[in-house]
Length: 191
Image (tube, rainbow, N blue to C red; front, top):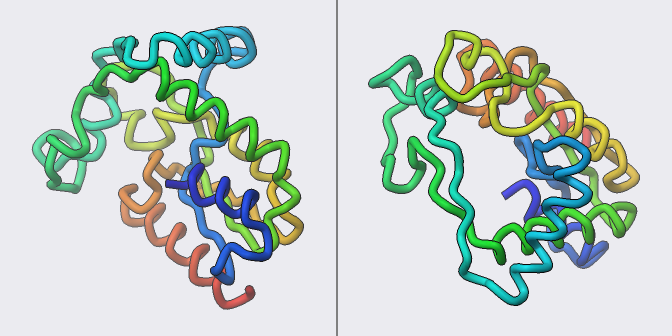
């Protein structure tokens, strides 16, 4: 939802209908190398106009889900039909929609007229299968990219790293989760 709400803020400007925007690890950039971000994703996006329902398999990675789920190493119980352990295939048109939203957001980033908070983890976790390191950072997106892109959003912004937070900061360990909540409530009080 972070990409969507930031995108709406950029598209609607002063007419957004809210007083502020708060995001938790928003999908502002692909977690790929430069070639895949600048050539691969745009190529798949273009092909998505022709082959909308063609699918791309996702890796069979369990690290992120295992870091969340109580039945493995996490603290949470949730419906894994809705938030799956293994990422399902995505369509070419889905890649196109994400690529388009990210690009259009950055072109109109200065149009965000309300204060915006962009929170992200302090560290990136590499890998696919669970290790204890998955409890200490973002295994989905690259926090450095979120920081860089977040610093371009709107005129009144806060871009904040939450020490050792997971991708879903609010689902992190208690210390990181409390830091995320403190950051949100402090931002709301100031703006």
